[in-house]
Length: 176
Image (cartoon, rainbow, N blue to C red; front, side, top):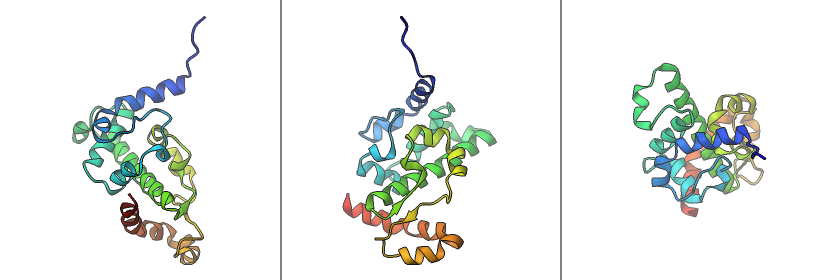
């Protein structure tokens, strides 16, 4: 009797495998189709969140591999639509990585990246981005600027959360 293959799992596994060349050289974690941001080490999250040590090349390589667009050094040769797809996915993914950093600090709750494997964050970034409302996480009550956030959430909550990124990266760097 033949083996039953989950086509979604197979497709996700193949997609993530195509983008792992630089990842394997840069980070100790082995990515699979089931790896969530929460599965990554603090050091990996910090490096990616700070966009340090060639992190953008690693992310572009991963994203382009998932989309079957070749290695990251081919990015500049992509035409309009594929190039925009990579750019949009990378911006979405960097946001999710930074939200994960803030989640680990205990500052925020509720963001798209916490529920989905990394490969799905890339493959379905447009859907996730459009379905997640608001598109930014909420602050936890224990965060010192929580009351201010409640007042500003509807008008400029996203700007306020993004404004916390430098402090979060500094705090997380101290922790790591």
